Image (cartoon, rainbow, N blue to C red; front, side, top):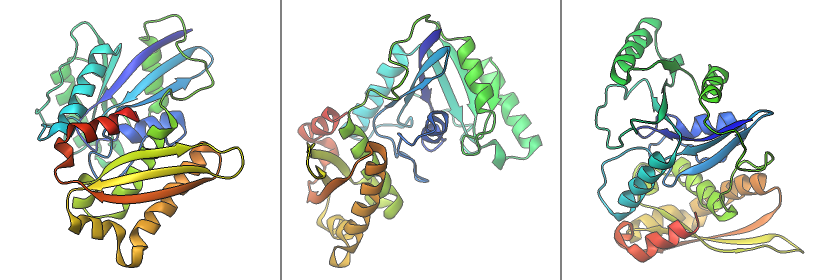
Length: 288
């Protein structure tokens, strides 16, 4: 029996969340074609008969411009320092990007992945892998998280370097995150899928209330904070059509994950410059 903590790190939109979801065979991490869908690290636990791998899907590495992003990168640095193994993931677009703020621990194990290998020609992938091998001085594993290519090989490589000989969690759970966290993540995912480029990055999600009921549906109230009145109008849409769509799709994901019906209430509020308001950021972080 072997176990260990593994942080998946990389630039935004390199496929970190897709990788974790595919490994766990359940969608616990918000996925979108847009970058920076993940704002807080998602803990997911992979179990089999002889190993337990505790993954952290982390926010994409960025240069910070506000308090929210500073909190995101601060959490990432803590996870990097406390993890046993670091998995750095590149993709077909950002493999030459050198703007990396997170430093690998010199005494820690690491693996390097080249994701979205299915989008590269053989000659191009060989050149990128050679570059990454020289950069990191270690082997590079080509994968396609979306298509499950080489994921078993990646997992077996992780198993070979797990440091501990005991499990940290029961082998029948996939995360220690509270239900509020996943509710916020699912609503965020639908916001990213539904609106254009500006709105998702201007929207903060707070689970304001979560009441479990023995009789009837659980009640969940979620507040969507935006920065301007014009953004609020876009989120709500003509006749409330857009926010209704977000509610329907979010509720579907939440009910599928919780395994029970819920009554989901979505409220849109304007809070100018909310990304720099400490009290609001703390409310968001408390649900994590």
